[in-house]
Image 1 (cartoon, rainbow, N blue to C red):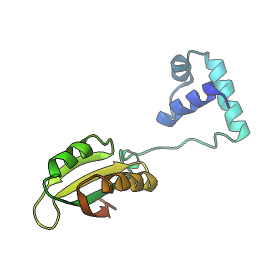
Image 2 (cartoon, rainbow, N blue to C red; image 1 turned 90 degrees about the horizontal axis):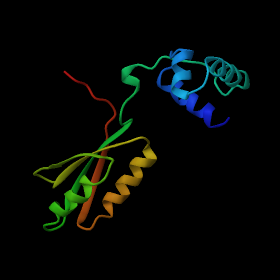
Image 3 (tube, one colour; image 1 turned 45 degrees about the vertical axis):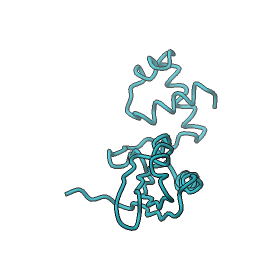
Image 4 (tube, rainbow, N blue to C red; image 1 turned 120 degrees about the vertical axis):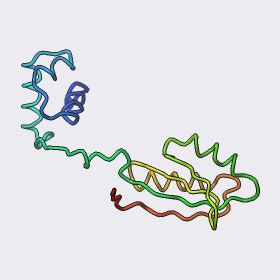
Length: 140
């Protein structure tokens, strides 16, 4: 599989119903080349089939969690700045009660979430934390 095959597959992943003409136009090749490439990918078993993807199947953050943080002293503002610079952090909430802040996190995998949690726990001034995974969201 070469770069052109990978680009073709990327287009098919976005829209498996794209016409040969559309695919050829995006790739800058002929329809016949697209047809030949697709047939070869199917014959080799690299492409096993085509499917429908529903809106609900494509979550922007498949793994989501809430991380509650306890902060030592007056470090909340500095920690908030650090958190705001992390691409996985969706929101930072200040709160009252047991926790000083609640951090909404979204990642592509549990491994990525684990790495973000470890980075946050290492921030100077974070004294304690607790994390809950969001399993389902129901909207009224």
